[in-house]
Length: 252
Image (tube, rainbow, N blue to C red; front, side):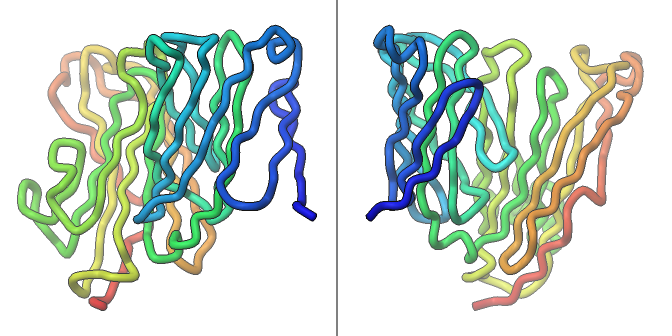
């Protein structure tokens, strides 16, 4: 007999079948009206999950994708569909797509290779404009091994930016992943945060959250709240350390 768990999210009840990639639909008044979004999750290589959201009743609609404390904004196309590729943060991965003016959808999947990777995520809302930087094996800025949003393919690690910037006040995530189970070298990887001072965030309070998972260790989360320099400092960069543990890796 297949085990079933029930989740209640924003007044909607979900049944989760604990056997592989599944589709979960919500119930409620919206479902009765024929508006039932579906979310399909399929595990891929690199502890990545491919998500397919189908919401024909909600074309061009904004939604928020939730996973293990991580959340980012998305937008359906003219047919109400959205395809997403998301770095998983847990082996038993649950994803929820929630709409502002409609029902939600949930999917769950097993990510069996997640223990092979170290992963660092940075999350924020609105115009903070934070940046995640990964320095592999003491690589200097601009050199191979220094990975960030302007050089996402510069190293052995993988960089992902999630969230639609066209959505005002949306949620955004940057994720750096390193294959600690198959490292090309021995050494350390330092992960840090930088926030450029812009006309949108100068003089404002900026908040963000870091989340890090390493094989064999508990996930570690840290909250950040800073007051940005005044607008006379536009163009400067606020560098923030100590939000992530250094990844120590050995060549395999």
